Length: 276
Figure (cartoon, rainbow, N blue to C red):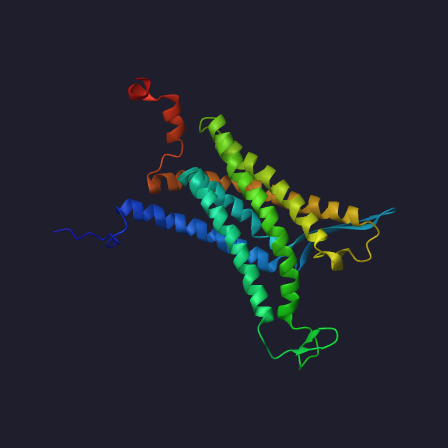
């Protein structure tokens, strides 16, 4: 007698296929949320320098991106996969959870700073210093940067991710499920432009970029340089992720037994029941 090697189902799991689909969704959503939390903590703690150009009128122009930008392209790949395989409602749900996660990160950073610790607080200036080194504790340095970066990220994230999901399904509906590359790149490239402009301008507005902009002859030029550099980096990543996106959609569609364009095929050929 053959013995089934499939794991025993939990009472809430309708079938082994249902369980498989939910576990894959958990992995993709977890990667999205983990990357989101990581980029908010890393934020603008460090800038990665790609190059520098000396100009006569504006001085040196440094092309760099914040370290928090590194995991950001993967979040758009995740939402595109969820949109393609699980639909718009689930993609929007994950985006909302990500927004709540941003708020949770801010709350823990705030709580960790207000609870009593071993630091010395100057009663006049309110400056916080480590009793051993006499310097500001690393946590408070990270906290200060992360507060500004996370606030900017929350607003930019809200605009960009919902734009990404909406445009993905707009292109999918317009092309009736064809041209996978168009909805993948068309949604990501526009939404990442919104995100890049918003996060840089809001970070500057809340003062999170003051240290980097100090001494610069032209703040506007530096901000534009940061926006252009950040967007070019995201643009290249978005184009490159078309290859893994195609592969993952093809492989996961078979593995999960999902037809990503079934709803659009139904609209093209509604059948005799819809014609009555």
